[in-house]
Image 1 (tube, rainbow, N blue to C red):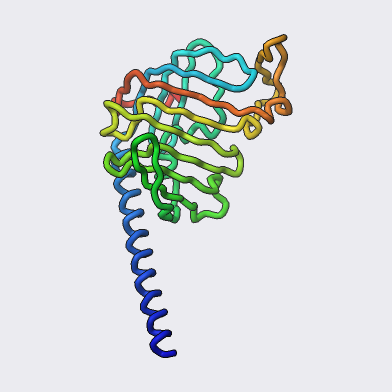
Image 2: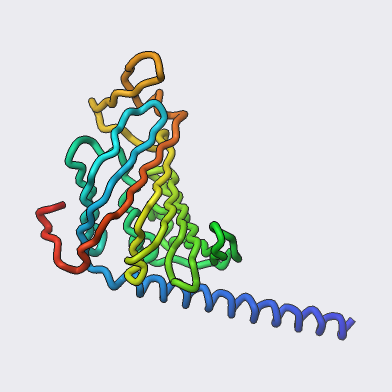
Length: 234
């Protein structure tokens, strides 16, 4: 019995040590990703935005995206309405990583395309925080977030998928696909959008958006990084 108890205790110590080491590695990985993103104090970017919401007619448009630390983000559409829910502020990845205190949990690995990614779950320490849970999929070799899933209290759930290129050194993507549930999007009072069901043009309301899913795709043509962005832009 004593030998068996010792065996259990020894196994417990070994597993605890492994778990502690894994936790330490995850925290170190998050710090490295955060440090890369934290290089960017502000940026102005030119790009194109496609918005795809079931039955909603929103043309592709040229946009300017402005960011300034800690959490100012604006998408300016020169030709019309940018249909992006409030949660789109997390298109700024620093909001996910640096948005507050959290507990990081190692959730193993996954694969995005041909890239093996580390999966980390971020649980906010503040019980009243709007973000309930974020799951990030990290390319460890390049220290960038390939995908992020976030669940919030007020703005529903949404997902970001990032493709990187020449701005990878700053942790800035060349392309973002932002997916959200339109049932979680709150239309401002008195605002409606034209949409087409293939037969006739109707008006949307919060009720008839509930069953739809939306997607915003932004392709970045260029960035001006750390050149300064005035507060008046926001």
